[in-house]
Image (cartoon, rainbow over all chains, first blue to last red; front, side, top):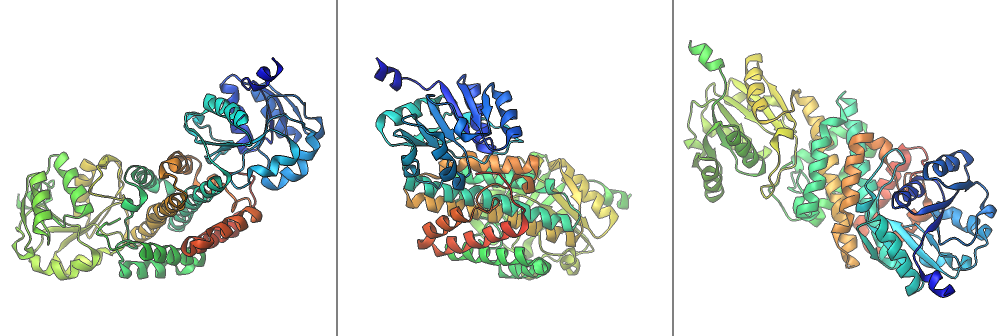
Length: 270
Length: 270
């Protein structure tokens, strides 16, 4: 009977970290009628605000984390886990991290039941998202833990899958390119327009169509522009115009070269 | 009376070039009930197909372009214009190009009435788009020509503005970053997943949210990930994992450095 209880669904959740990931996970679990038992994090004010928001207790002391709950999710920065997790004093409570780049094994010293609960999305506290559409990438040290995480995951996301640590790291690197780096491309574009007193809004239809087109045709079939048609004259003009912006100029050169190296000629036109 | 006629609205349009831009412009004007008088381009088969599609005549001989129509739009590659446009033998017909990087003046030798009609979008023939949302950036050598282009532009797009050649070049460079280069980031991400036998579809919610978030918060406020929080440990891991992919590794390094150079620290997390 005790074992059956232990294997039953997750109800009470402790969340460590009240940053972007911790906040969005707390919201998602609250919205799916889980009980957020406690929010734990360094900053008293931030932790208190999120705790109020999701109806949880809170503490800024990691040694005061309540034991015996169904799931402990750390959404702490990677480098903070090693320092903080020993303070929890967990025995066999299910403990998961949310990191794209950390292997499952780093949790071994802290509990017998461990896993990973990695939401593949870019989160900002300022912006609500539909968590149902966020891919949730899970891993666990045992089948029964995997089942428990799958069940909990499926109640907040419609896109849950099990991946191992090596796959998750590849996904994380891919996500850096697809999200962080494409956003930086937008930011450089914004700066270029800004110099000429033009608004970033001008580019929004283009940015949205670029994302939608890649989703439908695949990015390989979607590439347009001077680099993909090896239009060296336009490329030379652009590099000259970027003369006063050495960072952007260097990136223009490198990315253009990489596109040319990878693709045959194309008649596409931006 | 003759002058009044000349100043009145554009009805009959000749389109030079049946590539991505020519095709989408022909579709947009047809859908807005203009008469596409003729489609002109090198490839007989491509030109004939588009002409049939929009109910136009067609020719693959540039010296057989019909004179006296209201608007001639060249959607030819930049380098082809110099060769092809002298063959048209236009006198004062309104002639516009669609290039982001070419100044208005290059059309001077070919007509007294010239302009630019630059649609700021990434076009592929395979993909229909809502032209009403495409920003149309116009320029003309005279006020009356500007008025005619504005009127024609507003009948196919809800976002028409006049910009000069210097602004248009800046917009074109910004568009290369925001669209061509972000799409190349998607492509590198696709390749990384492919090595690990995972599907690009996994990244689509992330890519769409990244685009939407930048549109709402601005890209500067949207940056997340290892570079923006200067997480050197994760960056080092990623660079090591990219060891077998020197092109992607080099871009990872450069773009990360540029993000670090530009931003303060952030607590955002991918």
